[in-house]
Length: 497
Image (cartoon, rainbow, N blue to C red; front, side):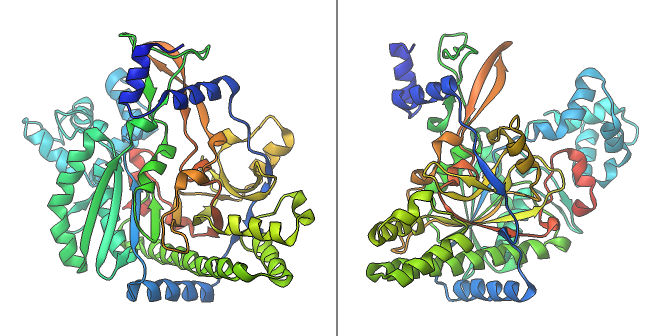
């Protein structure tokens, strides 16, 4: 199946033949469906904070950050291209197709934060935005003869208008960072970007950082990383043989956001905030976002202290402590031990609790489901026979099974990629995050290349299977904290004006 030159190519990418063969095996066997026990709901897997609890969690967070006891970092996946934002406009430009979204784009063109830039780009070539035909306007908007928005990542597009200037999502994350990822005046933010756009991100940071540092009285430490080629997965033909390029080389494809686990593993911080690049809002409605980010961090810190305390107590345990831990796991960490647990000796139970306590910890914000596609909160069965909280995508569920399909549709909430993570153990050492990934939660998708169909494989999603073996808390957050931009016209919604 693999030639000598293939092995050389695989090695040059930083991978190895065993890993690639394992990927091919997944194509052949498929990934098993995750078995859902029930949907997580408020009071049964999802925490709904009271006003007093929010106040308490904010105080816990502020106490730790003001005393300089913890290192904070904001992690922003930002490598995605904005191409899908402009699907309708590309259709109009290339084929003359026009739908309601295209009509709305032109009718409200002046309301977009990028309007002045587009006007200037047209004028530079002697075009007047008020008299230019629609095809010319879209051409200058999407292509490199003008703004080139069709080839840029979302993080570099103008999203929001302010009195003195417009802001990109990257800048909105700088502002957010100053508000909740500020540890003693230091704000650390890490963006994952694609190699072809990294220089543009770095250039923008150099341009705007002095201004934001002055306004907020902080010092930013902005870093970047790229999705490693070693995490790409091999593509195969429909018969599961390696797909080859025209020159005979193997085709590897980026393996989805699950590949970013490698990037996350390289970061050193006590608390890491994770949020997608496009889920940002103007300053006037940032308050809920800031409040709940701090509250989620306060919850993580509170539970982390309890977990570390239990690990210390387990050095000298008794039956009463084991019973207390059994209740803590079932009722608060929402981990139901396997059926064989009751038959274990006290020493075996102690070892089980140590293993389950000594794991990375995350709090996941959950908004009420408004029909958005993506992962939801569920109780799911694990390979060791236990059940725990998992963020589950539709591709992981056997929707042909009536019972599983009903459970999936019973979900009341949705994960908007709003996470706060603690990735160090009680000794202050970083966990090896790969040890807590479930490799059987990957995805297989259909793609094409050069007119030929192929199958592609994604690694377990960063906030799905890549964190399957973490201690997990689900917390309800306001819907207003979730404002993604999937299409350009989403920028016309009230939340972005």
